[in-house]
Length: 420
Image (tube, rainbow, N blue to C red; front, side, top):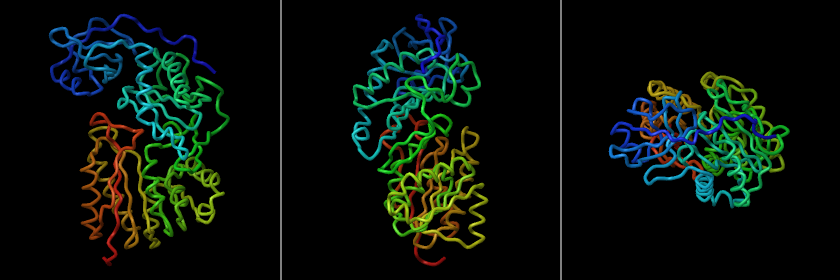
């Protein structure tokens, strides 16, 4: 398959932009967004994806970015500092730089599923690119990329070939918001390069085989950002009974089984996701530890199912709680912190003395210190003393280059063996 023939043509005339002094300071400091309220003048009206050049008070170049007339993020910065020409060579250099950052992952025989372009943090605001073995998944969160799509697709496939990364196909995913707008014949899940996949594609993570539904699955088909935390869980699971809450497709569950867990219970409200978890276990049944592990899936609301387990006086040696983002907007922050406290309360009630409790947050609206305090303060109030054994953030393929780009934080804790 190929791209639709009538994608919008880029206007070669740059938009000259002036912004507030505060916005200038933030842009020079590396912030990748210019909001509509920060713009004081435009040389012309623009279309999504037009190149906008931001000038200082003395007409000096400050930055260049992609213009989006319909979004509160009016300009997505591509480059700041000295003047630059945004052309095929510009994109090639950006892709090559991102691949160099991930050189260790690329060379790893145990993992061929990872993020190649991490949005703003790799200079591609509103775009991510994930790799699942020989399948690439390009996800767009903004219409600004549509006029640049043909050039970017050619650059990506060429740069991957030069890096020795075989590519059979590129699948396009569109954000929910973008899917509701005019996308010039582009559809979520369509293959824009190579042959379309015949069902989920297989890839390896930490030596384990997973399937990724790259056409219709959540995000791009798998939550790649927790790879290193899943490896940590694998290393601490031997001989343990494990509860995986918000298990999704079983990433933590399978790693626990491969690490020697005797039993794993996976809870999620999505039957589809848990069916994928079952298939992921089946893909690894040749491993004796996975084969011996008792695996049970439970479809239901996480809070309700945890309360049900508590009522049955169930206890686990390792409890993992990896919820979705509870704070999409700033006003959701307090509610998110309360949800983390409730999950800590329920999770600790299910964790045996001397056991381990692992909890994550994937909300950029809640910073690491706030999340840490929510978890530890709840444990203190419950008189469940715990020690933090590790506190992790982003892996190398999910770099962070500006404050709002930091969303993932995970606490690994061990509970005191003394009775309550």
